[in-house]
Length: 268
Ligand SMILES: [Zn+2]
Image 1 (cartoon, protein in one colour):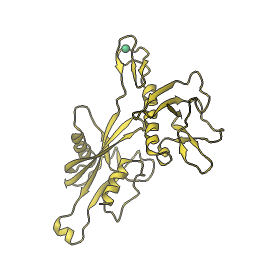
Image 2 (tube, rainbow, N blue to C red):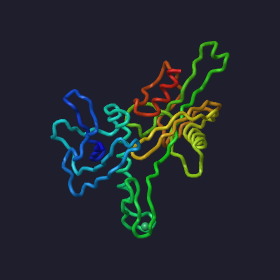
Image 3 (cartoon, rainbow, N blue to C red):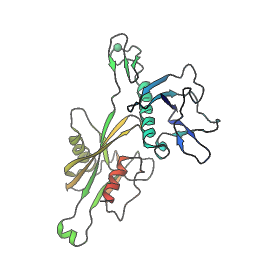
Image 4 (tube, protein in one colour):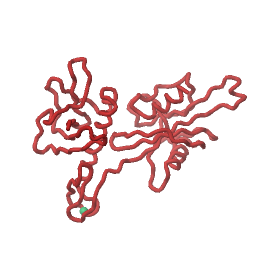
């Protein structure tokens, strides 16, 4: 069976490149693409399609001097790998993150041991540990003009916000983690109310996306504006407002479901 290698060092993953201008891919082969040290734990993960095995390794130092191999930030691999390998890389990154954060049993404090390729067990108290992703919602809110305003040429507008923690100057959609005890739709309504003060309705599922930065699942929704003036939650948001398709600020790159939600509206 074909073996793919996901070798990480910090936030970067090792890719193979065929020639200076060639395509990028995950390294393939029975042996690792670089020397694995005894302290580099190797996780072997069977991919869900069963077309290959995925071996996951944390390297003790980055690879810098081997022709045809290059370390690349995980987020950037969306633009370099095919969609299947990008998903494998994300899954590998999440398992490494989970491994690093579950060294000890949360019940009794004993060191955990791997039980299967994707789970651990405490040898002392028997507690089993499985990865549980952090679920977050993200929502596209549209304000549609009344039929009278529509006849006068008023356009639909989209609510875009800019969070303090965005690394570039783009504007995105309202998003936030789902809390225990609430449904996805309740999380949408709560996050919109907390972050913007707006009332919405007609909440509909759009799509979802694994988000391995570091360990999440984004669940996308659309909704309609009902009432309220924008009142931003200043602790989280630096700016926000209504934008038409003709005055959009910089928007997220195509790796995110936020961009797909915005493009879906632009193309409608
Ligand atoms: Zn235990």
